[in-house]
Length: 508
Image 1: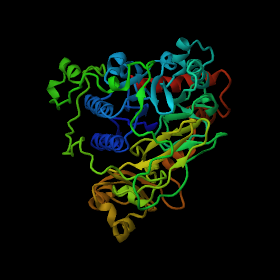
Image 2: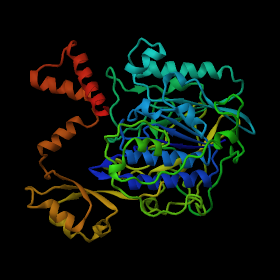
Image 3: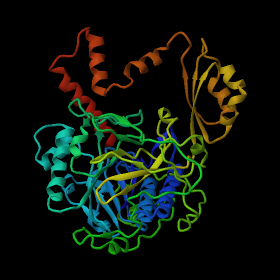
Image 4: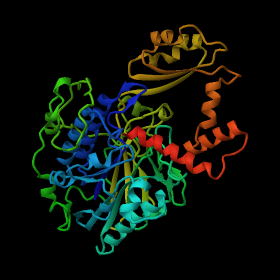
C-alpha cells in the first residue's frame, strides 16, 4: 500500500510579517500533483494544518480546497496538532468523512481506525491527535500529568483494537515530540510538567508511525537517535516504486468508517470556494466553507490573491523524486534531482517525521523540504522515497561588514525577490541606515542583526544563553539571576504553570 505522508502545513503563518499563503497554495498544488502521479492509496496529514487555533478565513479556504482535492485522489486522514483547535478542526467530522476526509481530533477516537485493503490484506490507519496532558488525561482516564502518560493511553486503545484484527498491518498518524527527534527554532514548545518528549517505544505494535510536529524530515532511530535517512540523490531515471508497491488497487475494509473505498471517494461533491470581499465575511462564509470548520467571523480575511496556476486535473508528467531529504542544490531552484533508490526503513516500528513543506525559520535555511512516499509491504516493512517540494522562495543567511556585503559580486544571486534574507552585520559600530542600504541591493531583507566581531552584543549574548533551553529552564535561570540562588521546589510548579498559561493564551 502506498502512503503519502505530510504534516505541519501551518496555513496562515507569516515569516517575519511576510505572508506565506501564496507559497502555501503552491505547496497544496505540489501535494495534489504528487498524490496523482504516485497513485497513492491514502494521504496522511500529521497535524498542524493551521498555524493557530483561530486561523484567518482565507487560510481555512486554502485548507478546504487542499483536503477536497486530495480526497479526489485517495482517502485523507488528518489529525489535529498543537497549533490547531481540535474542536474547530474536528467540526462535523462524521459528515465530512463521507467525502473521504477522516478527521481525528478526539483522544477517544484513537482506537477507531480507517481500514483499507490491498492485495496483501487489511491496513488499519489510526489517528492520534496532539494530546495536551491537561485536556486529554480526563477522557483517557490517566492520572499522571505527562505527554508520555496520555500518548501511552491512546496507544493502548490502538493495540486493543488491533488485537481483534488478525493479521492487519497498522499505521499510526500522530502529532508529538518523540525522543530522538531533531528540533528546530520554528516549533512551539509543548512542555508540560517540565517534559515535552515521549519515547518511541510507546508506538510498539505499529508498522509505520507517521509523525508531525518537528519541521525537519527525518527518521527517529531505534534507541532514540535522530537522523535523516540515507543515500544520496541519483540523476536520471524515473520515479521508482518500492518493492511493496500495490498500485492504486486498495479498497476499504467492510469495518471502515465509511464503507468501501469507492464510497470514500464518491461522497457529495464539495464546491470550490470563490474569493469573497472583506465586507462579505459573514454567516455566508461558513456556508461557502462547506461546514468544514467553525470560525469566529471577526477575523479579517486576507487580501492576498492567488496567482494563476495550471489545472490540478492535468499534473503533467509527474514530479521528480529524490532518494534523500537533501537532494542537492537543484531542489531550491524548483528542478530537483530525479529518482534514486528507495530507502528501507527500520522494522518493526518505523517512526518518521514528514517535516514541514516550507521553512518557517532561518535556522531551516539549509533544509531541503520533501514529501514522503511510503510503500508498505505485506509484512509491514516499508520503503520511503522523498519528493522535493519546489521552493517558492529561498532563505539566505548573510554575515559580514556592511560595505563588504554591498560590494561582494558573489552575492548577486540574492538580489532577486525570491531570496528572503537574514543579515548579521559584524561592523564594530552599527553603520548609518543599514536596512535601507541593504534593501537597495537585496530587496527582501527580513531580519537585520548587529553582532560585532570580537565582541558579542547584549542581544547576541541573550540569544545564546536561551538557545536550546525550554521556557521553564529560562525562567529558572532568571530567578537564579535575580535572587542569587536557584528557584526552590515550591517555585518550579508556579513557573511551569506561568509558561503553560502563556502558551494557552497564544491559542485563544
